[in-house]
Image (tube, rainbow, N blue to C red; front, side):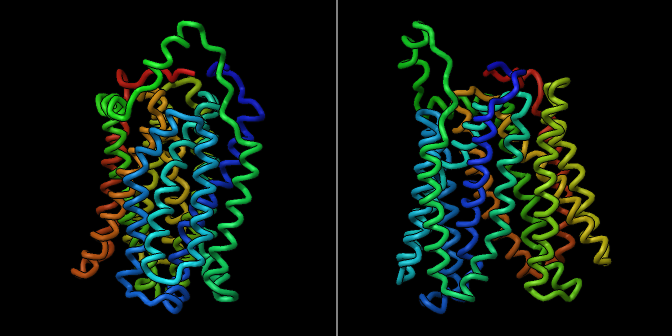
Length: 415
């Protein structure tokens, strides 16, 4: 199948199947933090220990993501996805049976490890199935599942209020285990074209590189280093806005904690659901005329999100703030929908999933550091609008970094 061929029905089936996995992935991550009160009433722990449950997940997930990507580059991507889903779903179910803080901590670390394989493998599998004409749209639709899963994470607290926190983990863990069985029969790697005798002879030496060779290949390419810096700074700028937004709405407009949280996430995630798909579709259409289209769409999205932050930070009129949240939510996902397709243009395709894993690692640790720094600034009585304005400046720098990911580093993607 060439880059200009239309994708097969199996290619779109892969998108549909993985959309639900992405939704479960983030839902299973988020349900813990939405049941803080119920869990602390059942298992004695301090607030610091409860925070450590999220920290240990992020550390294990971040550290293992490059290795998870490397495994997806070496072996059957669909089977790795299925195993990852089964493992983290089983871990979710086991979490319901934890009776001590140490057991909870162990299961959260295990969840981070088991989830580390998913996004590198899923992104690479979709790029195997989809060529230039539909890559960004397929990736954008897949990632819209993340938005839905994040929003549905609030179901954890709602169900726990009516049943018990253990019921929530058992329910969603069981759903994931059952769905992994469904995927076993439906999700397959894209059939490879028949190799030539010369390719078969070279497979053991050229197509089975080691992890060190993968890292050397990635970091020897300036375009990848720029993409990595862009992705990290984008996470920093985004978290400086998202992380403080509920507090800002609560203090500035006298909203309750629940109202501020639902308002901020509802408007942003609502816009993001649409923006993720529109940004992918637009980039695919534009890329037929300009090979740099995916970069341009990412740059436009980041620049369009910048004034939205400034409006939210500097106008004490709630309708204006809410409109800015929708604009931000719509435009900010443009680079997300296009990031893996951009990597297809700038890295050796043998190391695509590894490259995604490294980006995940950098984003996780930058995001964690930003959340901590936000708390420190909060303790220092720094005005939230100052942080928002700095985040807007950060987005402008991000746009410049992404713009420099260009020829001669970019080359046409190979099938």
